[in-house]
Length: 127
Image 1 (tube, rainbow, N blue to C red):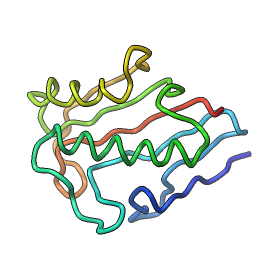
Image 2 (spheres, rainbow, N blue to C red):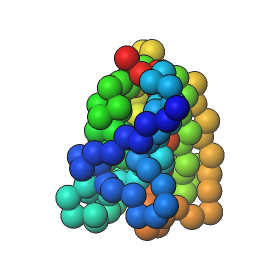
Image 3 (cartoon, rainbow, N blue to C red):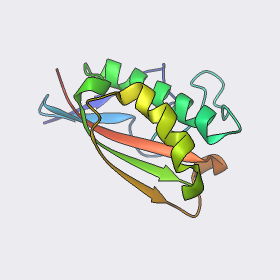
């Protein structure tokens, strides 16, 4: 059984997908989050650090709505427009995930939605 997770505190989907899906009340799979302001729908920030912060704030809102938190995230995937931005992204990312960071993959991609610099998706344990 799956439960659709939706909050207006994170950007609403702009296509045929959901912000997150919880599976049997145990795991939460988020859609990739970019640096969109949930109210205006505009990209926030010009640097990868600023955009990583907004993407993480969007993830936080979705995790909260799904009754979980960064502490329960077990896996993330970070998509970067430029791998040279890894260090700056990592500094901000670390502020959200701390010492008990999840497993993570980071990959460079040719292009991201709205030409942002970073996109982050997560899998978390619920509860």
